[in-house]
Each structure stands twice: as structure tokens, then as C-alpha cells.
Image (tube, rainbow over all chains, first blue to last red; front, side, top):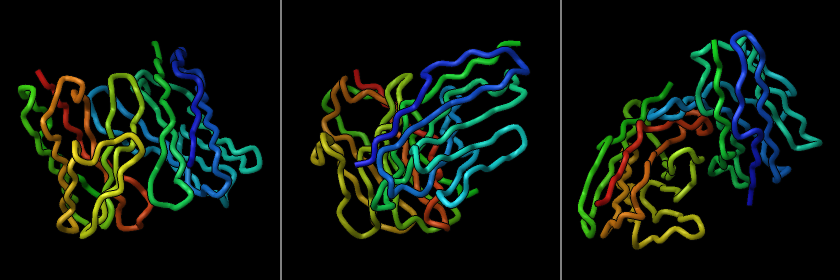
Length: 112
Length: 115
């Protein structure tokens, strides 16, 4: 089945810096890749997603890039702010298209 | 976005008791709901996929007799942790695919503590 690897597990940046989180997936048939942000004790919230027919998508300070050949996709956060501090999860839709498989998560800490 | 409601948010129970968690889609019909388990500082682990009107599909290693799932309507799925033990203590979170059948929306989660 689908396997999703996520790096790094923790990431600390200064306010205003950029943050990049990378994920790789195993199933070449996967075609949908969302990113979720989870604050402590709260539910995961979808922040951005990308389909396999697109190489890059941007929404204000957040962007996602996808390399289908290499089977990896990345989350880019620019001009980070303390409120960006949270756990970020990448995910890939499994081959059957029936479930999202999550990476292990990245704890992002933005210090002011 | 679509709203998924989950109750209760926190349960403390004695070892051996059963606990039922409800997951409702409030403004859309959810043909498929998913149940995840999350340990502290860890990722979301898929436990089972619940389809309305049929038996749930469990992931490898998840005991179906231990974690009973019922999806009796298009807006409600329940997870019952039977004869709970301390090792079942965890954060359980449901989710459902929205009207476009792709984006996943999460419930607020249930923290289960078994004494």
C-alpha cells in the first residue's frame, strides 16, 4: 500500500524566515496530496492541496510543489509568523482513492 | 468547508468498560467516514474506513471486535471501544470526505483515558 515519508520531524525557524517540509510517497498512482496543520489539542485543518496534474500551487504565504517523477512534494511557508507554529502533516490519497495516508508530521516552531 | 462534529471530546473510564464515540457530518452526506487514532506527538494512523450501510474495512493490526464501527446513516458513524484497557488510551479522530468526495474534513477528536 501507499507509504508516505515526511522530513524533518522538527523544524525551528526565526520569525520572517522560510520553512520547507518535504514528503515522499511510494504509490505512483496517487494523484491527490493535501497538507494539514494541527495545533495542540485541535483537529487537523486543511491548509493547501495539490493534484498530480499541477506542479505548483500557491496561496498567499503557503505554496506546495509536486514532482511526480521523483514522487515527492513539499510545503513552503514564507515570512513565517509565531502563529504558524504547529504540527504539519502531508498526505497522499491511496491507490484505490479511498483513504488518505499521512506522513509522521513535522513540528514547526517559529520564534519571535 | 464541510463540518464534522464528534462527541464526546473527552472520556475517562474504568478498565473493562465500553465507550462509544459519535461522528456526524452536519451539512453534507458522508458516504465514507474514516477513523484515525493519534498517540501524543505522533501521526494519524488510519484504523478503519466506514461506508454507509456496509461493514467497515479495518486496517491491518486493528481488531474489529475491539473497535466496533457502525455507519447506519449518511450522516452518522460510531466507534465503540469495547472492554477498554489502559493501552487503548489515545486520541481518536473521525473524518469524512466532503461533497467533492476528496477533501477530508476532521471531527474535533475524542481523548480517551482508560484508568
